[in-house]
Image 1 (tube, rainbow, N blue to C red):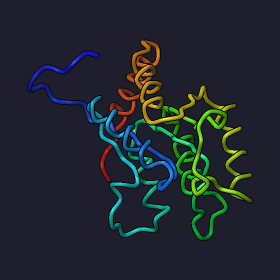
Image 2: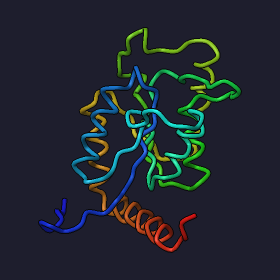
Image 3: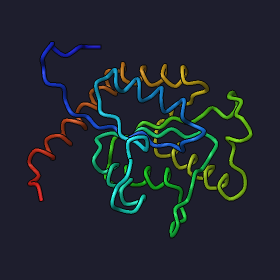
Image 4: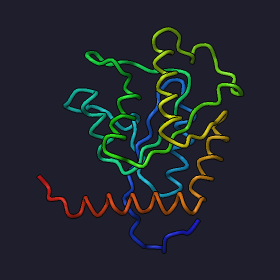
Length: 185
């Protein structure tokens, strides 16, 4: 990977990492660490803190402030906010698609990854998750993972692919140009 010159200004590349939380913490940490090595700005629920708006509005605003979406999907659909029919993770994904963010989708390998029972959702949430995963597979070229290490291996392979790097770089540059010419309100 090419390194920036010492003293060179690093590009501001905010990347949103979306997933459920309690079951995906070690995977989120692995992706955050990898993105930090790639000199990006990682945005996700870990950085939210106290904010004036509703959790849904604030979360979706953070998604809109990013240039890339990384979605990690395990065996939980996640919490559904009051007044909504979809989980926060699902809403984050839909927001990223609505604003056409380049999206990297990673699904847990259900056939090869043993999952603790507490990390598996049953009932209506499981049905919604199954439907969401089918949509993800139709809309994206997804990668599968079993461990944080296998997730990182797939993640780094994606960044090493020249066509993926160029597409991602193009998208990031386009978004950066849009932000420079868009007047502040």
